[in-house]
Length: 417
Image (cartoon, rainbow, N blue to C red):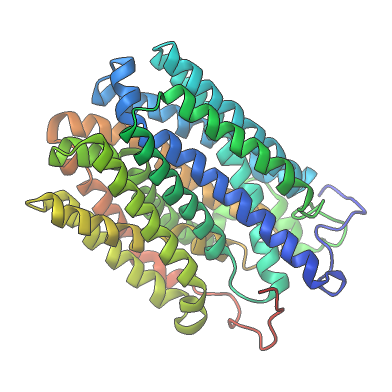
């Protein structure tokens, strides 16, 4: 194992409450602007499709650029965190997101679907690697504060989706050029990134000389985490629940526009509602998890997501479909962050496990867009999301296998409210 004298993260005893505030605030900002950037792109997909002249299947391939970039980022993110620490990975992830959104803006002005895919790949790399860094930071913060934190961090991502959805609604309503809209979003993300990076600890997740012994050596062997049944179960849960979240992020505006004959403005409004429901579920998730436990909360989440997806797929009118979107968002809200938190239950090898199981989530993001696009050509997008419904059911079967390794909720949580 790589040896270093710098600690993976400061000891909790040395961290004053003000430091915890800054750390948490920086992560809130990182997740928020990532969601804002994502929503900015998604709410303009109908316009980008029209400008580039892409079919539904071709849009699936263009969107796959985001997932391919994410897979590359996720595949190197864990190793980069282990070598350089979370802050380094978050910094360069944010840089790639800004560059990617700007590239998509300029590609749209050039009417080039190929360049849009290139920009999305760069954006995806930033999201994939950056989210590994952000989630490792979040798990470390959660352990030091001794309270559930990760869902609220992902709640900030959903809040960013919600705000970005409303901004997209306004941009569509006033016919703001896509290029202008995306360049403004890139500038906002860049400005926030400058502040948040300096407020993250320098070495969270970095492997240290303290991580020694048989357990650490076993985790350090390539591919070793995939021989752990619990890690595999977490990956299956993430695969299904990430597909539920990602399919909405990629396709929901088009599902509502094409499947219910709505305008792009209404589609953007419904997408904002999905982001709002995700945010509510994630901000409420910490208290629910602390009170009812991981298994019961995740099973309830899967049931809500399945009900919502089924409503969107089979509802006879847009009103019921819109109600289904809310249930879909509430149900999908906790699967990804809680499963990532489960991967970090054991601090030894946490970065590697988080990276490994997140890869399953991004595999869903990679496979989902083109598959749903191709199925949508034959069955319509509403029919295609039945595949997502099935995968959520599979995830639910594995949820009981990812119970916490230790009893939850130590009696003296650190206050940083």
